[in-house]
Amino acid sequence: MTLSKKADTAMYEDNDDRFEAALRLAEDDPARGAEALHSIAADDAFDPDIRSEAAARLAEVDEAQAAEALRSIVADDAFDPDIRSEAAARLAEVGG
Image (cartoon, rainbow, N blue to C red):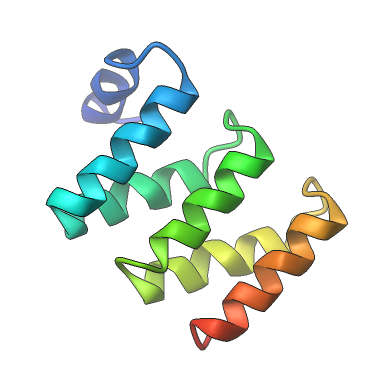
């Protein structure tokens, strides 16, 4: 983890706060918001539901990164089958 990511993580009380901040950032600065959402979608420290939601919201700002995150969720047995199925449907929507 880079120093920058450690600092970003330390600024928030919990993962829900970090996710909400990423959503706000995506509204104000789509490129940086996409980076933050992609980071959350790939982070095992987050609840699978939040990771899935981050990947879905990522599609609103960067379809290519969203497709990558959604493919990862579809292939990951750690996710509930329903979440994986939903990720596959969203992946089809973004053309991944």
